[in-house]
Image (cartoon, rainbow, N blue to C red; front, side, top):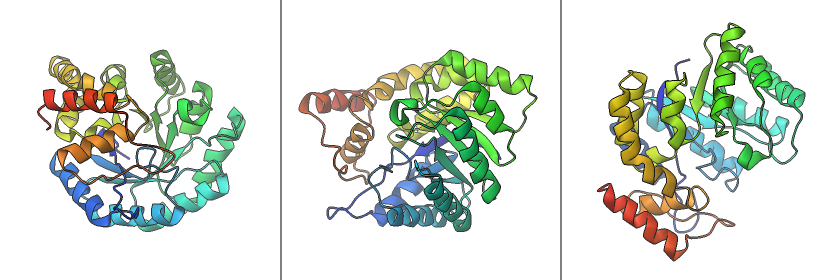
Length: 296
């Protein structure tokens, strides 16, 4: 499965009465596709997966698949700290017609490395949809190590890892491990916007991006330039976007991203508690960056 390029980790727009804003979600899907992205992810971390219900998650997967209608890759957020719950969500993603399921490493219970392998092996054996491993130790408390990644990558339907551990040496070790074991058709995807350019330079194939919610055209152009080997242009775009890459994490994701979209006039709405509105000083910094990029 080809996951090259820019996939957007979409926010979940909420209505004033705290429901999923279906019309807003469909509007965002079309806007992002029109601005050149290669894939869309619903119900991931940026989509506030921790505070949406499973019923809402399934509804969002259905909306995504329906509205995308084959124009780009439609990826369903389908992880849980319970393997049984994750299986139910991955099976739903498969039945919905999603192109792939993004499955975060189980959080809070801190499974051992062999437990992580068995988790993904069970999912892979029980479904037919391609699965992307999502490693984000800053949120889960667990880091899937290089040896385990390479072992998991040998499973037929495990097609990629979204790597959000910022250790670039680990990325190199992973890519070398895959080469040494002659593992083909498995992709390393950046999970950190600010590390996407250096990750592509050593062999990653794209990004699952937060920044692309706010500036999809420029982020896609940067990734495409890097994948084409035009690192002069890619570097120029990287530094144009760098302040945005940093300010969108000035407070917990997706709070600054949703505030950005609200300022720009795109559907986003509030964040669900326990996330809270940004502090005034953060809002001022965010506003300056958006103005500097001519986004507002």
